Each structure stands twice: as structure tokens, then as C-alpha cells.
Image 1 (cartoon, one colour):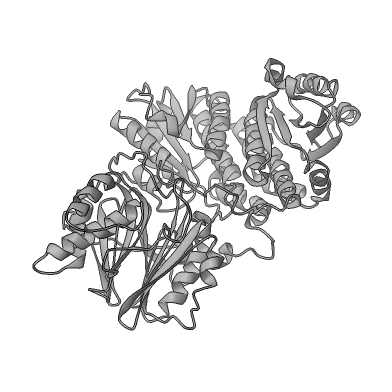
Image 2 (spheres, rainbow, N blue to C red):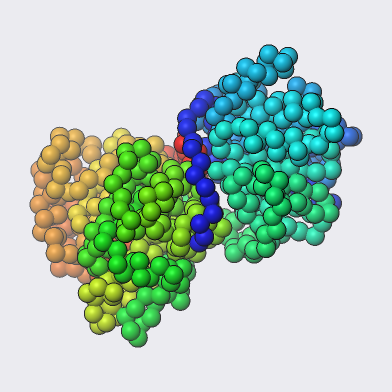
Length: 633
């Protein structure tokens, strides 16, 4: 991971897109078909409207439709619409009605320039005022249309017409974040694209190219890519491409190979990607530990951290930061690192970190955690930490992502693409990476070789134990049927299992739309106990550990008030006799070391959320109002 990305200020404006899908193609294939196929791959990035622009009979044809991508598919016949160059977009907006007008692509007044855009243009209001005074008009309230008209105004004023130069000048004058692709009838043989703060990737084929916001749109056609950095643009024709900065400095990047295969983007016989990704976790844990465990000596090898080993050894404090599910893995990382390595750890919501003027010291290590590697809040936290002289590391899944390139060093998860919006396999891989990091640090501090060997032996057994949990899920399905009609859920855990209670509740909220809260079990007496009644299911993580008796007391308190107990228990544990006498349902997981229990306990909680959402008929892979990653604030 290399330090590449400069600080970009990002602020809130109206009509912004959080994580939209971009696909553009130029080559000898039917571009309409390639782009529509690509949009299917990136629909999880945005799904309230979609659109496509292509050249037909030497004219720019724009077709767009509100709703899911299938609405656009219904009006775009790839057998009728033939073109060798096209761009497409799926939109997910936090503000603004998802209607046909606001859908991308947007055009200038003449209809000869079409653009698709992720991100925000902060100064669009002032630009719009100037352009209106010059006689230009607007059909929408979007910042993207303003950008299209602004580019057109610069092109109109040029003596020597050059669309790429018009785009370059425009982007040098706008403020904000963008991943941008431009198609113009004035120069119909090229695609122009640029990025600042929003992901964009170029796929390289044989006299054909795909530009996209995600590698998933590229892998079906080509396996070589380059990753433009911020404030860089590409001018692409069938015969090649030119990469340069907004200052007109030429760039020559070496292409890299996409690390996953097309088959990983298919459901593989499962009804939903989320279920497939839950079922893949034995494999993804195996991938997370492969080549990193030195069993003979009890050591951990994390090659991505080799250059910062001394700084890790000397660290007096570690700050873990992330959003959503990644914040939960960070909280568990705090417990692991403090327990195994004795280093003080703080956990920060990335969305709060940069705004509260955090106290950071030069010797602090900041570790950013993100599945996508594109989360805007986490990127801003990184930049804040770097400004204050901290070493910044990353734990990410997507190779070549912005966070991977912005950090000094880091650890890749190798979990493969995660399509379901609700993160599952990425979470357990994040926890595994943090566990390995904790042991690495612990062996530098106080963990003996025999203890290191014991931890690593148990970690190597995790995939097998996960498969035991996944072998028969019928019991969890029955519990889901029983409680799908409940309106509220409470999740309780202690110690290492408290972050798991939080994550279990989040999974249920995300995909079932039921209200659920996670709590440290002891905190139930300080308020949540008032919620318990005959209709309240309470999920309790009651595994074998030193505080099992404490969790039993909490179970007694719930039962005394009529609550229904769903217990996650350790198979074969003698304490299960008590659970059988009190719990309404028991889900057993294999025994492992206390520090590893959360990884196994998370599996049934993911399944419970999935099957409840399934019973309720929810759109599990694309839950309402949510996107896979938030790439602007």
C-alpha cells in the first residue's frame, strides 16, 4: 500500500450520489450490450435509477429510467441498439427524487455532450448562476447537469475545439469529488474520464477498453486494469489511451491483473449473494490466513506490514477507525490487541474522527478498516491522521482501492468480491486479520512461543469449524420462522462477544427492516430491561468463557420478565444444562479459544438475519435506502 492520495475536502450538498455504478465501453463489440451487462454487475452500487448513452446513426442517444435496472433493461433492446461506444450509470441518491429526469446520463443544452458522474460538485450553485447569466438553461436541479453544461460552455468558447481540454479545464475549476465519464457527439471516437475522490478503473483489452467504478464490471471481458489516482484523467480511443494529470502532465502506469474470477460474481446456485457469501466463510477465512501462519514458531507473517514492523513494535497507542460493520470489527480488534499485545487501543467512527480535532501523537499508529477501500469518511480519517504525522495502515478487501493506495502499508483480506450490501464474509475476514495482527504484536511483547502456537493451531481449525455450523441450518430457519413477526429484537453479549451482539443486531436491521439493538449484557439493567415483554426475542451469546455465570444472570432477568431467549452456546459445554432449562432455543457452535469465539458466533447470527429477512420477503441483497459503500459524505 502506497501513499498516493492528497487531501480532498468533501461537504454535503443537495442531490448527491453516494455509491453509484459507472460503466463505459469503447471497442469492436456491441457497446450497448457490454455496458448493460456491466451495469448488472454494479447494480449493488446504486439502484434507484439507471441510464445509458450511445452513438446511433452519428447521433447521441440517451435512454434512462427510474427504478431498478430491470426497468432500463425493459426499454433497451441490445439487439436493436448497436454502437461501439457507450456509457451507463446506476444511481443511488441520498437526496432528490429517483425519477427519469434526475437519472444519469445528463446532457448539455445541445444534447451533444453526455456525462455520468459519481460524487458531488460543491460549487455547482455558483457555476449555475454564471452559466444562467450567459444564457444556458437547466432541466434538473442536479449538480451533474451543471457540470455537463459547464464543460459545454468551455468547449463553445474554444477557438481550437478539443473536448478533452474542455473537460480538463472544467475539472480544474470545480470543487468537490467526482468519478466522471464524458461522451460527446463532437468527438464520437473517444471516451474521456477523470477522478477525484471517487473510484474509477480502466480495463485494458485488445483494442477495447472498459472504464468502470468497480472491477466487477470489467472481469467478464478483460483482466488487466490500471487505477487512476486523484486529479488524473484518461482520453480513450479504440487504439489506445492517454493518461495525464489535470496539470497536463503525462502518466504511464503499469497495468495490474484482476485478482478474482468471473465465477465469484455469480450466485452459484444460491438464491441470494448474501447466503452465498455466508456459506463461503470457511474458504475466506482460509484465504485470510494462508501463508501468514508460522506454526512451528508461533509467529505471524504479514508481508504488507514488513516495512513498518519497527514502528508497530514501538507503538504506544493504536487507533482503529471504520464505519458500520468495519467499526464493529475495529471494536473487537481493540479487545484483541489490548489483551494479547498490551498496547492501548482506541476505536473511532471514521465519520466523527476528522471533525472532533482528535488528539494524535507522532508515534501513534492509525489503522483504517474498510471492505471496499473507498469509504469517504474513512479516507478522510486517513488524511487527518497523516496530516498529524501518524503512520497509517489499512485493512481492506479490494486490491488497488483508494484506501489501499493512500495508506503507508496494510493487510489485504483476500475475501473476494462481496456483492450483498450487508457485509458477512468481509467482517469475519476483518476480524481474522485483526486477530493475526494482535498475535503478531503480542509475540513482539509478551506472548510466548507455545502460546502463539496454541492460538495459531486454533485459528487453522476455524474453517473446519465454520463448515460444521453451515452443514445444517434447518434449526436456525425454524427459529427465523417463529420470530419473523416480532417487531423488536435485543442482542446481548459480554467481553469479546459484545461487538458480535452489535454486529448481529445490525445485520437484522439492514436486511429485515426490524428494529434491533445490541448491548453489553450487563447494561441491560440500565435501561433496556424496560423493553422486555412477552413479545421480545432476546438473542444472547452465552458461550463457554470465564464470565458465563454473569451471562446466566442476565438470562434469568430476561426470563423473569417474559422475554424469549435465543442462545448461542458452545457445543458440549457443561453449562448448557442451565441454558436448556431457561432458553427457548439454543444454537450450538464448536468449542474454540475464547478470543476466537466471536468468529464462530457470528455465523449463526448472520444466518438468523438472512432467514428472517427471507421469511419477510425482503430484497436481501439490495436492502432499501442502503448502498454497499459510501463514497462521499
